[in-house]
Structure formats: C-alpha cells, structure tokens
Image 1 (cartoon, rainbow over the protein chains, first blue to last red):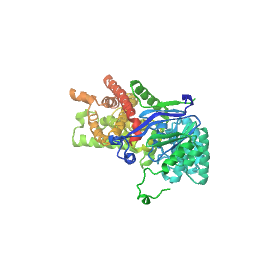
Image 2 (tube, rainbow over the protein chains, first blue to last red; image 1 turned 60 degrees about the horizontal axis):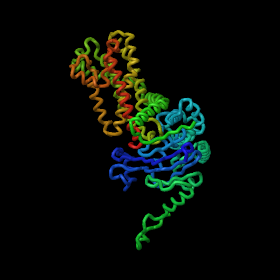
Image 3 (cartoon, chains in turn cyan, purple; image 1 turned 45 degrees about the vertical axis):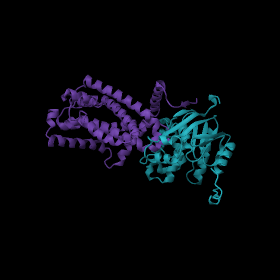
Length: 267
Length: 282
C-alpha cells in the first residue's frame, strides 16, 4: 500500500513489558497471571505484541479479535500514542488518534462543568476549541443543574453519562474503540448510538476491539486476529472470523480415549 | 492537512535529540492543560478546607514559629546567626522558598501515581503534572512572600523597592524546582522506594541549604560542598533581596542561573527518557 493511502500501518511492531520494572501492583499481578509460559517470561519480560504487520487505508474500519491477553488493548494504546513501540514502527495519518474512554480524566472534587473542560484539555483541545465544545456536551449529557455540582456527588450512571458525552464530542480523525460503549437508559443509548455512528462517518479510520463477532462482521472492512501478541490472520472479516470461530470451538488437544465422557462440550 | 506521525524506538544521538525536541513542542501544545490543572488544583484546595487558602499562609508561618522557638528561645543561638536582624524574619526569607521547593517535589512524585488512570487511557505529555504543580505552588509562595514586608514592619524593619527583585527570582526558583520534580518523578518509576527516601532526603536537604546560616560564614571546604546544592545560590539571592535589601551579587545570581539551566535540562531529559514506560509501569 502506498504510504499516502495509509491511515494506519504497523511494521514489525513489538511491545515489550519488563516484569522486573513493573510495579508490584495490579498490572504486575495481572500480567504475570496472563503470561504463563510465554517466551521471555523467564528472563523477566514478555512481548505483549511482536512482529505485528498490517495496514489500513483511509475510510476503513478495522476489527481486532482475539482471546483475553492477546494484545488487543495494547495495540489500541500504541496507535493512540499512549505507549511507544519497542520494536518496529507504527504510522498514523491523522490528527489526534483517540482511544474512546469514559471519565478517565475526572477529578472528583471538580464540578461536572469543570470536568468537561479538564477532560477536553487532557485531549489536547485549545481554550477556544473547548469553549465551542462545552455547550453541546452539556446539552447531550442531560445533567442540567447537576453540572454545577462536584462529581463526587454523582451516581455511577451520571458519571458514565457525562464521560460518554465528552467522549462522543471529540471527533478524532482516528477513532479507537475498546469494546463498544453503552451507558444510560434506552433513550440515552439510542441517542449515543446515533452520535457514535456520526463520529464513525466523520473519522478517517476506525479501529474497534470487540468480543462480538457479529458486530465486527457487520461494520468492519478488515479484521485482525491476534493470538499471544502475534498476528494469526489479517484480511476480509468474513474469512478471518470464520477461521477464528473454528479455532475457538476446536479442542486444543486430543482427549485420550476413555476420558471423553469426563469432558463436557462447552457451547 | 492530515498530520502524519511515524513512531518507533529512538536509536542514535540525532533521533534521541529529535525525540526530546518533540517533547518540548508537545508540552507547549498542551499549555492550556497545564494552566487548567494548576488553577483547578488551587480551587480544589481552597474549597476542601475550612480555612481554605489561609493554610497557604498558616503552614509556613507555623513552621517559622517552631524553628524560632527551638533555635532562639531553647538553644539561644538566634543573634549569632544573623546579627541584629530578627531571626524569624531572617529564616522566613529562605524558609518560604525552600518549603515551596520541598512541597512541589513531594507532591509531583505522588501526583504521578494518583493520575495513573489518565496516563493509561489518554495520550498527553506526562510532564504537565510536575509543571502544573510547580505553577500552583508558586501562587501560594507569592502569597506567603507578600507577608514578609508586613512581618518586617512589625519588627520595626524598613522596606525598600529592592525587595521587588524577588519577582524575577521566582522563575529561577521555579525552573530549579520543576527540573528536580521531573527528575525525582522519573526516578520514582525506576526505583519505587524514591518516594519514601525523598522524605528523608528533603529533611536533610533543608540543613544543607543556607536557611539557618549564610554561605559567607562557612569554612571554604564545606562551602564548596553546599554550593553544589542547586538551591544554595537562589536562596542566598532571596535573603539578599528580602532581608538585606541588596541587589544579589554576580556570584549568587550567576550560580542560581546555572543551577536553573542545568536542573531544568537534566530533569526534562531524564523524565522523558523514562516517560515511554510510565503507562506500562504503574
């Protein structure tokens, strides 16, 4: 693919986690549990992504599939510029690739309105851009007078609603979705879906991680299947999903004769 | 126009230099975030306590009262240190900037932990946290320094326009502080015990800074050691301006400027060498 026709391209992309330098908190424990017998784990590191190659053109929607710990979220973090490659490179054509996230920049002591401004500032918007964004976000959230209250007084649903309202008004060129989000009551969800569809229409490219194969098949133009940080397949969603589906329903190893009755099929 | 970025590991001097230059541009691009974080931190602190911003004054004043009681009243040493100048006024001129430094560094290191969620989900220059913290703390310092003339008048001391030179000294002190805040924040990600060690280090740092003594009275070999402390010259400048009403000597102002440039550069570079790991280390 010629470089001017590329929205996102990864070449030999590798992300390495150094377990010795990972703090003894949640990440260390969760990673250690996930790595199992991965190569490199014995030396205190493992590759969350390795030799990842793919490219998508402007206008394409990439669906990323794989089991837990396959490296799907890590891939989104690299594209979003949250973490940097240790090997290879990633090329992103477009302003402000954004990982759609709810309420990550919230400060409990600040009011809803102040948090709208703070979140937009985290996303790199200038003061003028923020001034333009604030009103539509406030209207969309339907939080009314609560916007002047500190968000520590909000219910979980209200926080999610405010976070979602901010997220869907950022209009990035490259939109990154880690599972499709839905919050609020039926009316708010319908409004959110419509807004998300608008965002997707405007975005230069979209990458979506989902465990719902139907969703990937329905909206994506390309699919990327990751397994233990490596690409198993990349291409037409229909074909990639069919292969992925086959691999997940097939038993991993043959069950010795005589023990078959003990293994119940999990469907 | 569509912006295009190609990212990969930095190898070679040229690539590393370009990486650091890009981090300076990123920080400038997010200047609004720095301002907003600083102003919202001050607002939160003001409304979270019953005495609000009065604590910005009470905290340093109480410290000065304690040290005055210990050194003048209990040890009887006050007059030997600063001649005819009131001891509490003399240490106030250097204790306030030192407390600003210590609080900023300590908060910056802690801040990078409790902002973990932001760092793992949003792409923005993490250097904004120590920088915004330095700006917020400098607002408190300005308020506290404004009390010095009132205390001076209460002790029967005169005022002079030279004292206004404290205003250009502030950016020098802020540069040294943010440089060291960046440095220790990065160090804390590599050695998780830094935060604990810092508490001890900052206590020691107070005694190797010219707060209870001046550089002029020191033995030459000890003086050379204390001069290696990046805060020594700038604290001397604060005292010369606020207490003695003197324009700072060339040695002091030159030393403070060199310390500012060195700490700012080293702190920024070290912080950004480790920054790519931050989102993965928490």
